[in-house]
Length: 101
Image (cartoon, rainbow, N blue to C red; front, side):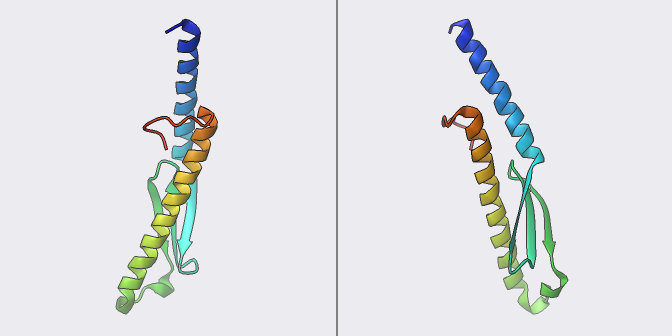
């Protein structure tokens, strides 16, 4: 591999590492049930918080609450993956690199 190509690969790797670090610090939020359940997740798909409005906590409706949490978590994951794909795509110029979103 010639030196210029090696240097370009190293620069791309450094940019990717920086983008991944930024994703770890960036969050997205999603909700379900009209804001009854809110989930915050990082760009690296780590769930930061789950907030549940007290008015939706009813022992008779635990199944509904579980569904709301599931919906909010999945929506937050989708948003996080979109954000990661967009940001990493900018760094790679649209190249599909295995192991990256």
